[in-house]
Amino acid sequence: MENVECRESKGETPISTVEELKERLNNLREHESIKVSEDLRKFLIENFEFKEPGYDNISEVKNLGLYLKYEGNTLTLCTYYFIGVWWFREKDIYIRVEPKDNEGKFADPILMLNEIMKDQDIVSNKEFQNVFRIEDNASPISLESGDTTFMLFLIVKYINVLERLVRKGLKRGYVFAEEDLNGRVKGKINLKRTYQKHISRGVYTKNYCKFQVFTEDFLDNQILKSALFQASKYVRNLEFQSFTLMNLLSYLSSVFEKVSLRPISDIDFVKVKHSPFFPEYKEAIELARMILKYLGYDPFANIQELKEVPPYIVNMPKLFELYVWKKLKELCPNSEILYQYRAGSDTPDFLIKDRDIIIDAKYKYRYDSKSLSEDIGQLARYGRNEKIRKEINAKEEPILIIAYPVFDENRKGIEPINDYCRFYKLAIAIPYREYQVK
Image (cartoon, rainbow, N blue to C red; front, side, top):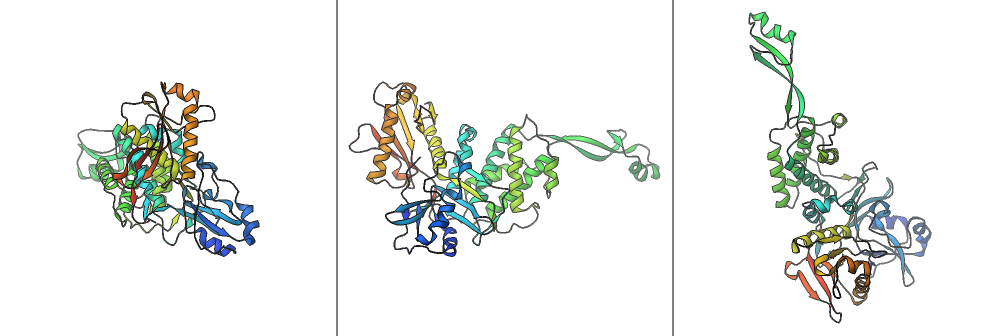
């Protein structure tokens, strides 16, 4: 777990009423602190804890990770490393936390997720489940300014699952078809229609038949296509454009070209039967259900601005951690990289076995002497752990590296940490935007 240094709102008058707090909770950022008066102490203590949350189990996080602490004699309410929207008091007060800014730039969690989703090893790792959580059964939260992060996270997950699915080929299913057949019979003859269309007119060589066809154009794929169509419309209507997403959406649309596009209803999802031979379909259908629920079940209708979203949370340090894993695999394609190797009470993020390297990912844009010293101390402990040293087959003192995010591609790379032997900082360039996307 990382120690949080909250970004204090300088000169801010302490909040003293629940109404002021309610307004402030709707507009927060990571690493921020709110000064509160002692008048609210009892109310806050009943709802928040005096300890930082962990980010290793997102299902246990409450109130988007907000927690209390004293800064001198002032009580403060601090945000953690999570972004999203969550109920503080259902149907009354909600919390909204957005990415922190670094010199006017904001991390782009959507493109980070899209990059991670390309690696099946990472996606299938249990830690991937700690990146994004949705409370789909809770009351939706109405937002005046809308919210694209939730839907884009959903869409990125969906289209990447679809991409893996179509690589295996679309599943086929049986559907009933009816057709006039000349001089032959297939399936069952519809006697009434055959008499009306042919026998009553003196034609005895034709039969109107009903039979089953094994085809890609059946219910499961029709659901997936409708959700894909809605997702494509949503992405096209955004103020900003992602060519990566648009290209993938265009490719997937071509794969579903022979599948019928039609409105979907709730009852259609009850009719879906999952097959163990197509495990990707189960996840894809569930994601399609959520997309259609919030964007509309009719692909021929216009998409309205998304004003209501379910409570959701994005775990930014875990997202960055997995993003680092993806980049390390690109930097060291021939090396074995161990993720979250547990050695007693120590769990370094990454071990590179054949290079005597231990790496810890830190979701921090700036390093002061205090936080750098704490991270160096943590890495040094990993480097002295006998089980870890044995696992990487260290023949000498291991190389210890802190991986941290930067926005500038020109700054990415590795540099030594002054005054420390075999300690380095590795700058990982992450996607960003120069304006906040609501």
